[in-house]
Image 1 (tube, rainbow, N blue to C red):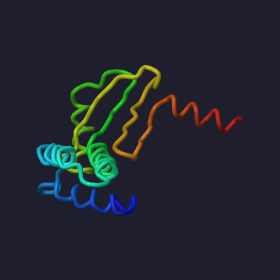
Image 2 (cartoon, rainbow, N blue to C red; image 1 turned 60 degrees about the vertical axis):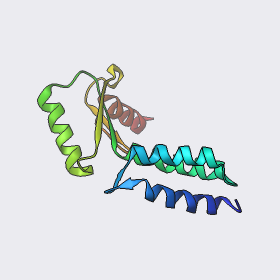
Image 3 (cartoon, rainbow, N blue to C red; image 1 turned 90 degrees about the vertical axis):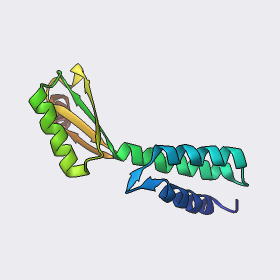
Image 4 (tube, helix red, strand yellow; image 1 turned 30 degrees about the vertical axis):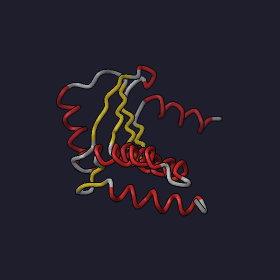
Length: 131
């Protein structure tokens, strides 16, 4: 491999081939990894690192982590899921967790997007204003 840029270029091409109808295809990812580890072309570790980074970013972009201070009821959960699907598309998956440290409210993370409507966040911002 001549450079990190070339490894990234190759990884992007392989990643594009791993998509089916705009969605990451798990079987294609498995085939790519198996082929890379089997063939071991020159510089394959750099290509594999760049490829895994692209796969990880795609998975994170399609996964919503929703934290709340208490367990959410059915209608609230359904409403959040519907809103997230409207904003990010039907492929979004959701993961709910309870974090009592939030004190109240909800914190949502989708990829690099974060919406923090928790009481803890509000208290921290208020504390910063007076320090």
